[in-house]
Amino acid sequence: MTIRVLLADDQALLRSAFRVLVDSEPDMEVVGEAADGAQAAALARSERPDVVLMDIRMPGTDGLAATRAITADPELADVRVVMLTTFEIDEYVVESLRAGASGFLGKGAEPDELLGAIRIAHAGEALLSPAATKGLIATFLAQSAAADPVGAPVDAGRLAALTAREREVLVLVGGGLSNDEIAARLDVSPLTVKTHVNRTMAKLGARDRAQLVVTAYETGLVRPRTE
View (tube, helix red, strand yellow):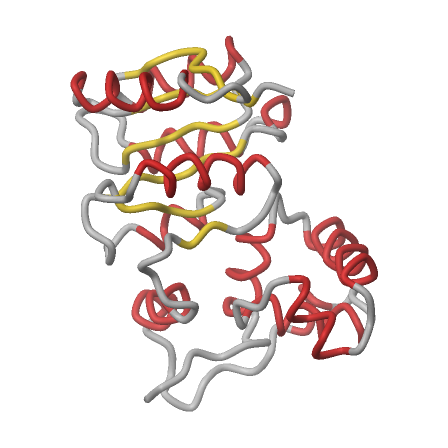
């Protein structure tokens, strides 16, 4: 199956480079290019891409607003958005994840990393670029929340529908563990873990694994490290 990709960046030269790279892959094709967020949201509705490579900073409607528009549209529930950042640590990273993006990647990433990011997002996995640490999302959430140093209590209401095992899996997903790593930790099969993850996403209304990571921290189930 061919992965349909939409490119959204205000730099025409960069879009051209991305197009050449993506179209060179037998399992991918570029279905549209947008120079700003408004165009990206409109093309997402008309072209129904599988993955949108979305620059955060664009003139007019930026990537965050476009991502919110895409993820808020029920008809675009299967569209995955990967945010492109100029810097590995970007002040808008967590905002983009909260807006519904599947992850982020630095613009300085290697071609294979970019192509891998598209495939990972298309598969519904959380994407943290290779240069990012597993705790990066937690760090940004801690900074943006400006929470009490002691920490707020766990938001039991949002987690009420989860079983004890699903909560356990959510904690491990929030810690950045893969399905295989979680399976080894819980002494179950990766398929069983995948089932728990899918059920947890369904119950929490999460689009993908990245949203589970954010929820784990926002509810207080997992807390950022302070060291």
